[in-house]
Length: 33
Image 1 (tube, rainbow, N blue to C red):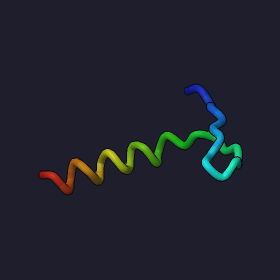
Image 2: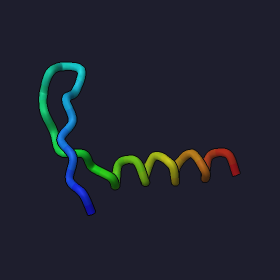
Image 3: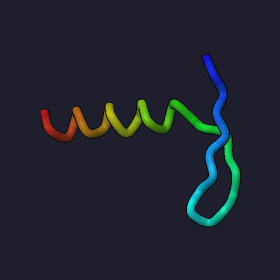
Image 4: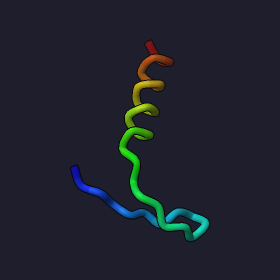
């Protein structure tokens, strides 16, 4: 798995967290089901 650094809107540089994206997708699927 690759590690990416992202620059947030406030200028902070953070490590990309894939689990946040996975959780958001899972929540949207459950909400629409």
